[in-house]
Image 1 (cartoon, rainbow, N blue to C red):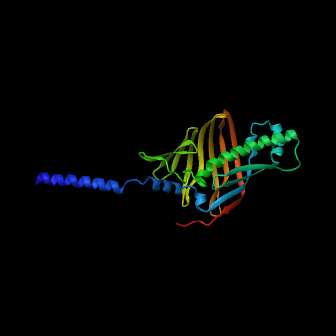
Image 2: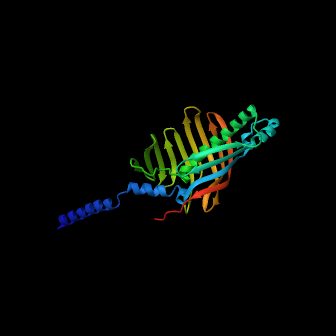
Length: 263
């Protein structure tokens, strides 16, 4: 009887292992969908398009300018007005206009140089902010991907528009790093009832023209119509060996929304 009992015990264990494994088999597509749904906070709240005015703090931009030249530079810079538009499909546009009479050629060139620096910084910020908060970091139609379960994290890899992307996230879907062949982004995220909110990030990448670029961003947000929108952004880093520092302030928000679809 003893061998029979042991055989039955082993058989029961094998059957339990097989059926238990089948019942707990990971559903990768559902896991990715769950991860996607704790981001794109604003889109899930019905935001279609965001417009705002943008004002740079000129003091840190002119920090290395000789004291006697700062008043003239500030007077010139204050003629610039910036605005932006960003939508849930990934469209981002930052533009400027010049107040007052048409400037002469040298003044126009100086204003254009100042404006380009602000526009590039603001656009770069929005391109990092939008996938976490408005569009989608993980593509909606993701047919080909690899999802690896590590000890405390998941590593999701896929190709988007010809670029290999790696997303490292904790088991609660908190993303710790976004990697591409050009560089990486390490976000700072806060969990809210509406999903994870981006409060900052560190980025490093290599640009074929500029060279190595490193950036640290800190985001101060405010509630607006029940949504969390950026109010101040502090950007500091180094681009091709040249240090930079920007402080951007967002005001006069205008949002386009649609009814939220309930499951």
